[in-house]
Image (tube, rainbow, N blue to C red; front, side, top):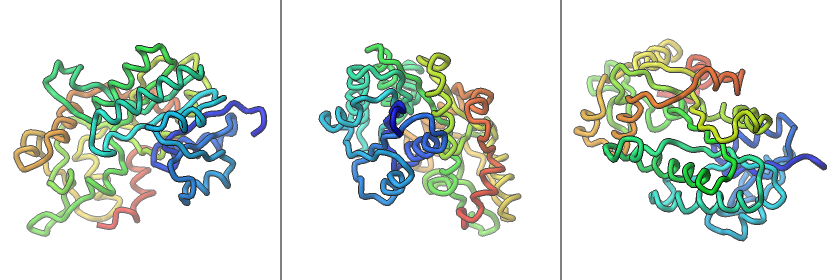
Length: 302
C-alpha cells in the first residue's frame, strides 16, 4: 500500500461502493480507503482483511469526512436518496462532499449520479431520487470540482427483490412486477439494464484514465432489452413460465403504483442516454442479462 495514491470509496459496505472497493483492491493500482458508518460490519471487516484502510465517516458529519478525504487522490461517491425519504437530505450530503473534495484538491471524483429529470422535462416529470442526484452533479460542476458522473441503468438485481416475479391470480404463470403490482411499465420500449456488481471495474477504468473521462456524464448499460425479452430469458433459465404484464406507466399508477416510480418509467421510455459500447469498453468482462441470470438462478427462488 505504501506509496500508492489513495482512492476513498464511500458506501464501501453497500452494493455500489462494495463493488468499487472490491475492484480497486483486485486491480492493485491504488490504495483503498473504504468509508462506512460502522467499521464493525462483517463487510467492513472483510475489506480490511483484503487490504483496505477502513474508516468511519458520515455524509452529514463534516469532521469525519475531512479525515476520510485527507491526502486522497480521488474518490467514488454514492449518496442515498431513500435514507429518510428526503430528497433535500441527499442534496445536502452531496454538496458537502463536493465542497470537501474541492477543498482537498482531489484529482477526480467518480459520482454515482442520475439525470435531473424535472429540469430536463421542464417540470413535466419529477423523479425525486433522480433529481436529487442531478442537482449534486450540477453542484460539482458549479464549483469546478473535477467529477465524472456514472449513471446506472435499471439494476438486474431488482429482479430478485422489488421486481421479483409473482404468480398470476389464475396461478398459470409468473408475472414481472414493480413493488408488488403486476408489470414493469415499459410497454415494448427497451429497458437498459446492468448488474450493480459490474460497476467496480468501470470506476477503476475511469480513475486510471482521468484525462479521458473527467467532466463527462457516462450512462452505463450492459444491454437493452424489452420487458418481454427479460421475461423470456428468465423463463428459459428457470424453466418457469414468466411473462410481461404488458402495461404502461399510466396503467401502473391507476392500479395504485407510486407516482414517483411511474414517472421513473415514463423517463425510461424517453430513452435516456445509456452507452452500451462505452460501458463494455470500461468493463470488458461485463455480463449481459442472460449471463447474469444463469449465475443468479438459485437466488431467484420463485
